[in-house]
Length: 317
Length: 317
Image 1 (cartoon, each protein chain N blue to C red):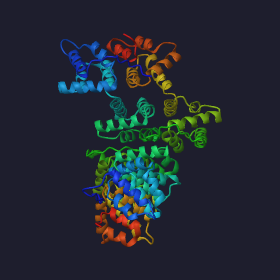
Image 2: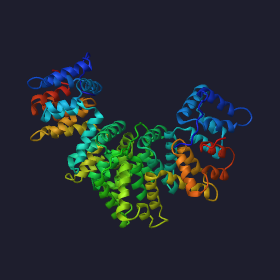
Image 3: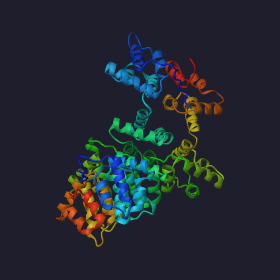
Image 4: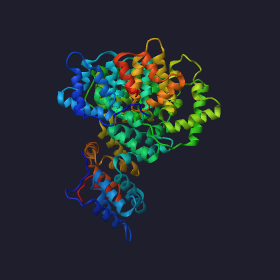
């Protein structure tokens, strides 16, 4: 369930493009107009606006936005304007550029695990078109140890999508997972093989069997050391497979509740989920925090950035 | 350079389909007619014939072929009639069905390394459509040790295709490869990372630098133990990247020259390369064996199977 609201009647891409051009001209930029247009167009419509803008003005709309806008507002408008594959490619590239540190590992995992296999594949194509390298080689190059052993297959595998479950296999592999975790062999090859190659449906069956047979959920058994970043990544990954709304709710909760908002995380979740499942995430947020997500966001942010966030969250103007 | 010869004027797919139907009917099958039609149609044309046949007779052409033909002739006609992605999916599935043994590892490597990244991706889709699992999970499940560490990323990575070479990186990574090989650390993570994630162009630059800087080709340095199957797989893989005709020439040479022909290998190479580079492979074969490939094949095979092989090799009737 998306939060994006597209009006029943929208102007042509050419008209939208001209309105945006006007918003850039004259004294100061008309941020309100930018929000009003872009936050209410879906990704196919935004692509047409970009094409119309480029053919009318010989410049990519993103370049103009980059010139006119700044700071958090710039980032949210830029990320939102990009199509899903290009946006994920950009986020993944940021995460691999530096020696990968904790939040970057989580962003790579998030992209690999919460998108469909075909979406992930399109992101790989967009990544190659833009950066002239594969996401696989960049992740492999910038990671090491257990993180590499987990993240490289995670971004590489083209998982099967389907409802087929092999129950016997689920039992065998639940047993393997339980043995490895009991031995604290969290970086074990077999454990990683199962988690990085099986379909989400199959994994779900395996983890249900784990829970039934061994009395604890796997995430609970992976909580032996709360400060261990790799275990945290494993737990988050499993959440992304089984219950992505819960994963994203927690990212938002931490982004909003800590001293000083984490605008990058907030912007990332809102722009990547507004057309997908942000309504479910917002429902989950309200259940967990007893406050609606848009209220929490509006208390914590301000100005054009806040307006854009609230518009993407689907709040009526 | 393909060896496949398609006549300038060909019948409609419906006519071809009816001719094939006739070949199946009456007393005995008309194998000559089957060879005459199918061996002179490219993969797009064969797909149209299959569609015409299915709509006229309510049965997949492959099912009819399966009923009518047998042994080596059946296998070559079936493999050839399939499109490239479906054929590779079938070959890969055969190679993963059993606990993977030596030739199977080589077939998986061959498919992963001699097809383009996009072809490999289409094979993954065909594999999932047919077997309801991913090739990644099947390879990971049926392999172990160094073979698994190499083969899983090999079939998983969507490599970058392009002419961009990072020379500094080629030097650094040639050095890493040389150090690991000097230490006999052939299953080392870094060595595998480089070989399984870099683009073929980048790898080529790295291996050229290796050769220039350290005096030997990497394949020579990987020949410390001629009986080691894993080293053999590494060497073959590098050949597949750098000089695939040489790799396939050797497969054919071993298939033809040993006592008793290896029909499975011969059929595999001829059906998978006839529309791609079988002419180059044949040229390489003649250079290396001083006998034309079609002559060697015709001495070693017989009957309809031989006729189909020679037709695919482009020999004029």
